[in-house]
Length: 440
Image: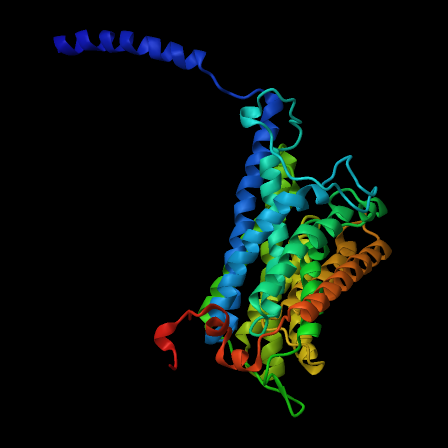
């Protein structure tokens, strides 16, 4: 007892200097920095969620192509993501966000490399009303890479690797940033009143238009259309495709939520949570619509349609995930699911071979989502939305078509018939994804 009475005061005396130091070392940021910190943190977190969508696209495509072409899709996806990272740094970021440095006002941005602030913001006056350049660059880069991922799946199983990657260089370095600057960089479409919250047109339909141009020039896979009939070509791994869809669904919370662009007030935080909820229910609406519709039309549920229905619901809500209520968001997503179920067989009727259904999901549902903004956002004009869809679509489709045609003429974009039949994994890469299941 005596020992305890002796030790307690001693312990208190020892702790006093520590408590004093803790008070002196108060590192609570000043109020003017708190919004900057939270918004920067939001961009980093939502950015890596969108980055995770690259894994989703990869797994979806790997599951929907045949076994002999899986390694090719894996290679294309990691390569396109890496190319996007370098091209967006080298030219894309400042071309898309030129500030006051437009080369042609409102039309063509600045040609310069991206640069971050100094370490620790040393010797610089930073705009504390937004976020760090590094976090903004990282977040916006992920949208650029997503656009390229869309093209990969449509052209699977018959395109050569290197022509595809050259196309990605131009898409991520020039095509995507230029048209994105027209809206998100403060260009002429933004001045006209075009509304596209997170990119139903700016990202998804752009990827769809580029994919459509490539599919038309590349042509369908051997054996897909024969004697006036459509021959189903089944994917190699539906569990993998389903996993990819769930990864994309999760990543979309970052895609739409981060596009709020600010997390510096209670109102912004509440809006981000509203966006999350609307994004989720739109995906569910698209999946359920496709599930019910395929049962009614084909007497059996088509899993691939349900997967793409969910993705179409996500694309549909992307242009305006904030203003709808949960009911409206569900219906907007459901229409996206219906579009997919009818668009996939339509493309087959006109002999446009889209391996993973990216054109119905990203282009057609992207157009619908952009139009649907007028249903819940009173600031949207139907005429302006349609005008912007046409402008972005014409630019992307024409430039992509010319580029695909040049690549076809100069180096060829399609593998030989023999290589296509044997599979691109061995013909282009010399390795298989599932060698233990190889027929050889």
